[in-house]
Length: 139
Image 1 (spheres, rainbow, N blue to C red):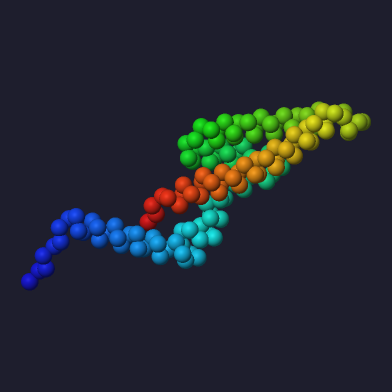
Image 2: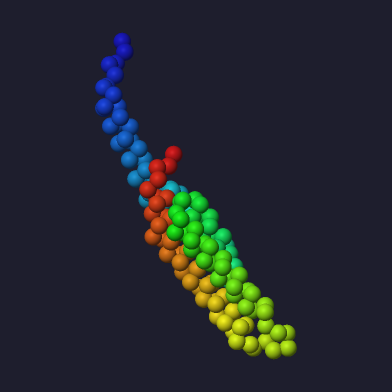
C-alpha cells in the first residue's frame, strides 16, 4: 500500500529546510564554501594588482565585467591611464640625467597607483565581492 504524498507546500518547506540546514553545516566547515579556501579562490581576481600598478586595471576590468558594475569599469580605466602615464614619465627622462622632475613625478605616480590600487582591490574584495558571492546559492 502506498503512502499518501504530502501537499506541495509541505514538500517545498521540507526542501527549503533541508537546503538551509545543508548550507549552514557547510558554512562552519573548513572545506565548505565559506572557509579559507573559498575566500582564496574567490579572491584570485586580485592577482594582477600587486604588479607595481601595471596590472591593477586588469583586475578591476575583470571584476567590473563579472559584476556588471560601471563604476568599477571607470576605476579600471583610470588605473590604466595612470599606469601608462607613470611609465611614460619615467621613460621620458634623458639617459644622462636620471634624476629629472618628470622621472620623479612618474615614480611617485607609479608607487601611488600601485599602493592605492592594491588597497582599493582589498577594500572591494572584502566589502563587495566576497559578501556578494557568499549570498549566491550554490549547489
